[in-house]
Image (cartoon, rainbow, N blue to C red; front, side, top):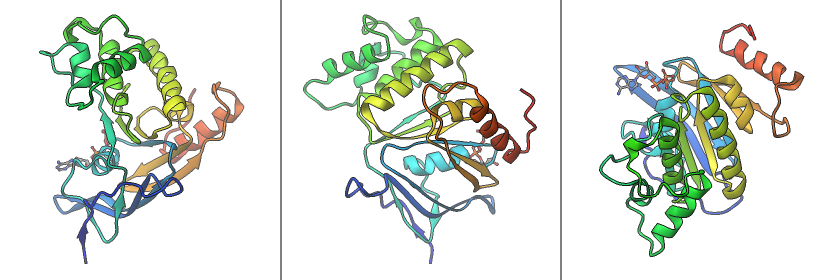
Length: 248
Ligand SMILES: Nc1ncnc2c1ncn2[C@@H]1O[C@H](COP(=O)(O)OP(=O)(O)OP(=O)(O)O)[C@@H](O)[C@H]1O
């Protein structure tokens, strides 16, 4: 019997998986876009999900985020209720200031203080009263990151969050994210097209193909991750799983 999997439950204890998916399926127009996906993410684990365009990465992320009512399965999906989603575009409200965007919907007496602290964390102290359209794309994405982090999510779901940024800003965002992850230790799922980004940041890389997870590899390289021999070997393996030859 198919059951809806939107019975989100808080993670009951520290030793339990932060995300536990069983037999997740999503059909669009009679075609399985997610096929029987079963996965566990440990608390605090940083997981990168790569795969060709159309392989189902965003569909899986949206399912875990609770943004897709059409996901079904014969199993369960358990994720922490305090999750936060980061998209490729910052999705800031243009009529609200930077700080108002960061604390929007946050019901806490000290919301403004926490928002200002999060802006300091992402290197935007002093920009609280700026309007989003006065910020560069990279700065807007940093505001979006602050907005996610101020909620102190147990689970951060990020769909190509650095995809539209230039190479230098992207490197800065990588450093920032790693620093924040180290401090706050959320579980992270990062969808990316960039194999190097996946290896640089994640504890574990998943490769998706036609709605299935076909590779599940730990990344045990020490941080900061230089493009040394170990990096190169893993890169070649992952590119080969993606059906791409390693030209670099
Ligand atoms: N709302 C929808 N209606 C119909 N088909 C959809 C819908 N959303 C996604 N799909 C289809 O599901 C498949 C997987 O899409 P998805 O966005 O998850 O892929 P992706 O791996 O994230 O791709 P990309 O890397 O290009 O973002 C695609 O073939 C897409 O056309």
